[in-house]
Image (tube, rainbow, N blue to C red):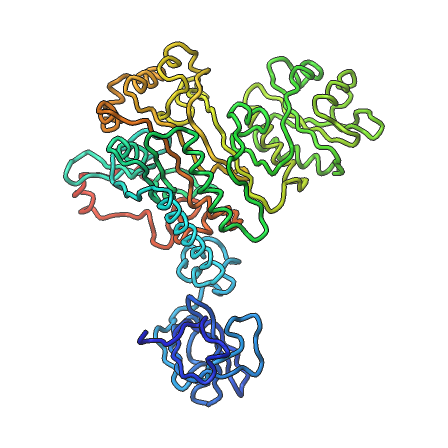
Length: 581
């Protein structure tokens, strides 16, 4: 390249004596008086230079750190090598130093330690944060994962096809981002929550295997494993495919990418992954996203404990999680109980099985006559601890939280492993908190048993060909065998109170396409952001996104969302009518 002969991570001992030209950011300066050492940093690494002439020292002292600099000179061997730097055996003796881009502002934080700064500051100055090699390397890692996924999907016969970003609004579970139309007053586009309908239309068009690294837009709140606004998924669909076909492909892809990029020495499940029915997962783990590294199980003890204590009255479901070899203090137990209560439980109850085989502590005085049944049901050994929750409804969620807190708090989780499972056999329908029947998972799913099941079974007994992939307690993807028959689609929506007119209005393209010979098809969409987050062991998804929004769904770097002019509003026929402060 004209501006540089080498990068800052390239030169080695064998390059000694060469005349070179480097460009980079002034990373650090060490002024010893007689000589000044300074380090250039670029995308590829670091190289040290040394000056001793007075004019050169004055020039280096005048350059603010993080300015971009060109250095031209001779490569020499260092008298004091640095074994921690790949270029640590050499340094540059400059003949010419030129400032290419001066840093005029005071740095808001030290680039080398930017991860220790407040998140809002890091996001506002993300371009500086990304100069930190520790931060930059996560984005490079993400790029490599995406490149691997693209190559793998192509090898498996999938065709990468991009689908539209401006589309129509559809009820897919989250709030849409809507975009006003200039040409059609009062009408709106929507940003896609997922390419769901488009990828199904591709199947009806005769494409056999589709994928894309798809941007998805959902107006929802942030959390540790979810970025507000925008996220990316490996969106896939397969023609003439069953649930087992999807599993076979995804086990190769997910098992492969985790094996390729997992930290050294980590164990990764190979296919076939464990399959767990939804209702079994809720029963045994208290969640449909079970962390299989946690050895603890939830047990139902309602039949044993109902009526045995004032807080175990009839109508409540009672769940227990038992831990053998428990050595924690009463203070630890009380702290756990407070966490469970803060999570929404009415309370946490507990007892222990003493070394003498008697129940002690907590609610043990109520349980003497059922000690044997409890010991048998929970497989208790001397010294065991049992925590319980009892609720009229929602007890599975509370039991699942309790299981997780015990597993993590007692350090019981298997180390250095990625444990996968499929959650299968989701109910087709469920009642919401207001008692309204709706789709449990995805309205586009094929019910098990087809039209016959929809016509002749209790809706709550109908299972769907829906599935989630879960790794280490994180839902990585959701998918389903699609409902491709118009008659089955009409009946499925009729059960939740939607007539044919609603389908024609909300899903007209898909519904009409299915009338022209639609193939059976199935798909899934693993989340790329979550995948990278898990592989890097990050606790916040924002760490692996190049320019993330903050936890309040604001882009503090670009200042979005922002106000627009009255002229812009008039062009799209919008009037803003906000309440006065």
